[in-house]
Amino acid sequence: MDAELRAAFDGRQGMLYDLLRYHLGWVDERGNPADAALTPLHHCGVMALAAADAVSGGHQPAIAAAAAVELAYNFVLVHNDVQAGRIDQRDDRPSIWWVWGPSQAINAGDGLHALARAALMRLSDVGIPSDTVLAALRSLDQACLTLCEGQYMDLTYQDQLMVSEADYMDMIGRKSGALAGCAAQLGALAAGAPADTAAALRQWGENLGTARQIRADIADLWGISGDGFTPSNVLNKKKSLPLIHALQHSATAARRELGGIYMKRVLEPDDPPRIVAILDAAGSREYAAGKAARLLDDAASAVSSAGIRLQQPQSLRQAAEWVIAQASA
Image (cartoon, rainbow, N blue to C red; front, top):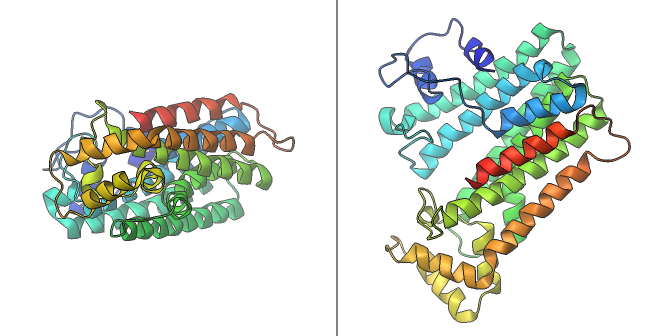
């Protein structure tokens, strides 16, 4: 996977590609090689490889597809850093926008998206039929478009106090489920899966990606110490399932207090732990965790029907466990 990702940059030189290499951890801010190990994989790449392994008994056919969805996911991360004003990347290095400005960060994100499409075309180099490659490209483009729809909804909801659970689930299904579902589908297609199996794995991925987002929301809100102080928690006033549940099911006084906190332009130090206390009293954490668990059950059901033939179904179980564990960390 590391070699495949680096191959996408073969022959591409210049400052733009230094920004992209920096984001992937290959170089430092001056373009000098970084002391990094192998490029870390995110959930999308892992799901593509797991789907191929489940279908064919090996992940090798899906390496190009996994690299493509990894690059696509990194384009999302770069843009999200700009939108959230996140200063540090997930490896504690400054984000692209913080070093080079938001305009260049947007440009870098667009470059990663273009590289993702180019990387997916490499499926033809390993003998994948052209009609399958075209279907894979169509799936990736549609997933990225659906993801942008979800991101639009997410940003819009930050300015609204009341958001329904149905609207929230629709939003994260687009924002977090679409690319995950695409990743699993591309892995299956690359491994030669028939259309119905690839579609079932796409549903597996969408449910798993959506469950991952709920688990990430829980971890982001409660944090390691359970006090609500995490890098990107309620300070950006994002709506999450625990918050939506509390706003719908808490006592009137608690709902008013919660609404008053979220209406502030700047939160005070005592606000995050108070929000967590209200959510705990409403049982909102347990409710959200239960919702994520049901989505995981739905994911398993999507690939367990009699018509779906998998050589190594345990690969999907192992991938799901890893994805949820990473989201909950």
